[in-house]
Image (cartoon, rainbow, N blue to C red; front, top):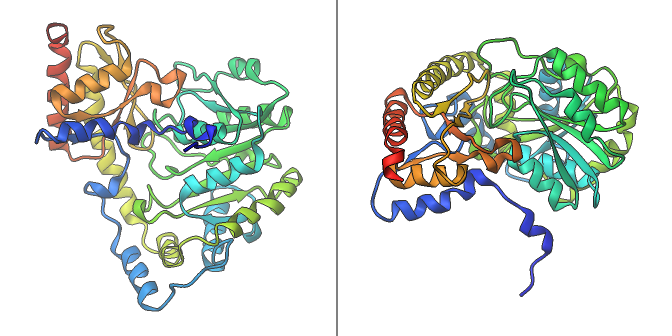
Length: 395
């Protein structure tokens, strides 16, 4: 029976690649999973005070439908967090979602029409392109410079009358690049000049290593900024699926979407109520574990990047945020980066993600998640080194 044409455009390389891993596992061999950015699966457990808040909510019978926009106490806590980062925001500008992915879906559904265009940094997080395509739009990638800054000339050359929005993923997934206040201001100015929405994803906002993080609210003024954020990464609540949409209160141009996007929230009923109660605890409870998380991640980042750059045939920049590296493949004995990733899996059991799964500018790279402990990462780097050093003979 027929399915819709638009479903064929949905791709998610990070999880699609696991189809190949399942075939490998059937042989009984061990896989080192470096493909999915889920810290809770490693040694970054959800903090006890957040877990207790969830259990307390369930036992306290907070198991009914919440308000479609999200419960007031959580929205107030979100306002406090994002205001501290500089965004002008009131409770009515916050919409709680079942993860950032649902928020992105709602935003795309609200602004993307057939043949409209959405600019996004290349490489980009795959759902951005998939949702744009799903609603009939076209994802347009813009380049980053060698220093990881947005290539302003490239962006300007790609803006057409069909351009509807400009996306910022900061820190970036898959590269770990972090835009500074100057970069953000430049992007806002370009978007404002061409009357585009600015969609900014700050899910890794506290997982920063070597510089201060600037929230887009610090430089947004009255620009049409739609902020996406959530609890999966910083607050270690990946499986609980809780995120939110915020809209800049100072921007009158957001009135239409501010009035209409709640319709989508009502259609899907509500976000998970017990998890919303736990999210309040995440924002208002102890925060000391975040510094511990960053410290552990920095050690693992440094280990992986050092080992990667010691391999003849691999080059890797030092990421400044999140928990990903995006090494470049310098040898050309593989057909493409996906062929490299599959060959690496089949010969070593290391599962990574091909760079082309993150767009045109990801080609020739692969993404590594450095969440496992140092022993596992060391084993993975040993196997990768052996694989690369012997690749010409193997092929």
